[in-house]
Length: 333
Image (cartoon, rainbow, N blue to C red; front, top):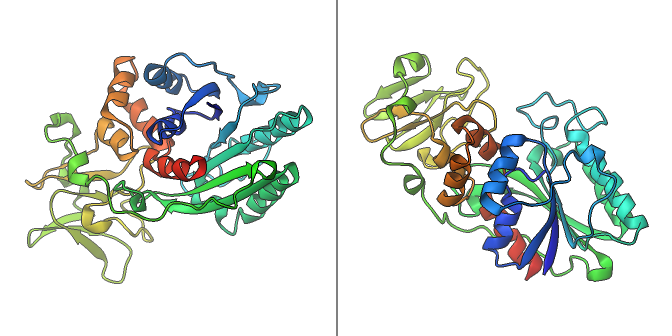
């Protein structure tokens, strides 16, 4: 049975993906400090030992697999891009470095490692850090492979680019036989994800968006920063109206409105138009579905007392389960 330490665990996308992949495993411990996320995690998976604040952990229990998808706050385009330092949230990966060194000294390195984060980690700005990190892992004895994967290529209708890095000790065979999953068609359509009966409180007054949205010849037209100046879609689609005055914003409609733009943990500017040209915000359940979670998971967290706002934030902070599932099938087959 695979033993896993799920660091920066959030709502448990990694253990959910292991379940889906059919990997027999036990969670040795998690590291999470967000109280609402802990409530959701516990509601879904039961009571699991929580190390708490990773910066205050001396060592981790021995395990075969560590996941360490550290906060993207300071390397994300949606954040302040303050980088990876001792004083930033994204700098918490340095605590993982410390714990790996400690495990190495004790002869207790995990056989496998997995990291997920925003694609900018592989960009020119942060590539130096990524290369240095891979070298550090190599010095410990790991092979590492990484790839930027879009959720829409792994079965979920969300345009979400994320870097996935997997590592395995060379003493255990390394990654010679590992390949990242090939692209597949959507497993579920946007129409199947969207709820049919939604409370009126989710609907918006389109008058507030008249400077960016218009209806022209039966098409929903959204202004954006392209030569044409706009992009169109039919009803029953999603568009992005965040930063409505932006002179650089593009991609406001993706896949003809049938691919959801990237979900975020902050206030979202996503609107769904139904067949009657009414526009509304996405529900918490729809956010969780777009991250690959089961309806049961969402309702367990909701029934545990987690607010709608927190549930939406948790989805935006999470990892698309379907992406991890397919990576884990290849890694542990």
